[in-house]
Image 1 (tube, helix red, strand yellow):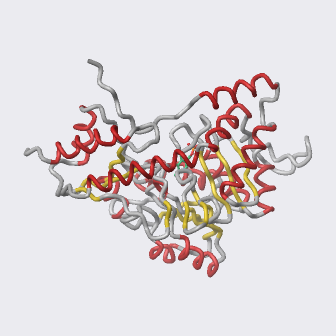
Image 2 (cartoon, rainbow, N blue to C red; image 1 turned 90 degrees about the horizontal axis):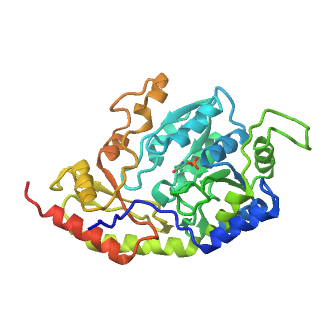
Image 3 (cartoon, rainbow, N blue to C red; image 1 turned 90 degrees about the vertical axis):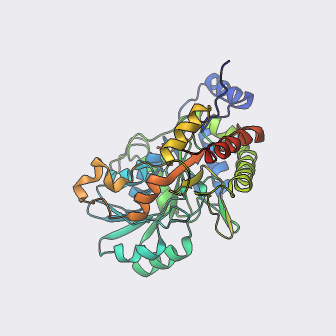
Length: 372
Ligand SMILES: *Cc1c(COP(=O)(O)O)cnc(C)c1O
């Protein structure tokens, strides 16, 4: 008998996406055309911001946002080492220096209490990451940014639809970046969006994505080819229409896990801070030493039951060879290092049924009762 796998992510493509793509293919207008514009308009509305600029992917969005906000070689940009590499790579792409700051254990994001001591004369920006779909607490960062004249670039790649009170992710910084990569909460195959309320940043972003052109063939500065195309944008438009449905399902699955796993010894379940709408890009638990197996053993045992879990992220960025020139070492960011050893993301995507979630819960429960 073939085992039915429960995967960690799955793009949900149906008739609407397929029809929309065919329509673009028949239209003869493939690159950065009317559908891209439609996606931008919808995205700006979704985040309640003035501008959305559609680009190739989330990494490009970060590069563009930093560049357009004026980050240049020699600048320092503060961010978390406990994130996807793209967050910090975008800083390197601008020739600037990533300055890491440890995370707070509850939300896995930069600890606002530790940021100020990382600020120097060279600090130009902070990139908070709304990790796993839980928006960062921006109130403290706003104060610091104002006091030290620092720009905030929100990495909202995992947080589309998330909220703090009545404000949407994508509206918390001077600019924000989204990814529409295939595994994200909504996707377009590959894709990215820069959102901002700042007219100047929006104009520079549009220029930078297309070879630095002002008017056609007027090259005002170095730019890249970071354009998107209407084939991907068409998928994005249809996905955005389903965002609320997808998000509601993720939150429902998360509640289901919360209720059923809270009694299991040695597991720490995700926290949602007051006033926050967590959109559960990942439902990430900590497997502590009080659990009957190590995190990696639990992952393997679940895999043997056909349940695929993820580890985001197994090694913090400050310990990666690509950042070794900055001479960070083990022990520099203890909370990030501890999280990297403990985190396990359980399947929570909207393609799963509540029965699938029960399968995961029962498997974890069973494993927790095995005597080694
Ligand atoms: C996915 C992701 C990115 C990069 O997006 P791509 O579209 O893959 O380039 C950046 N930051 C975070 C936190 C992400 O999860």
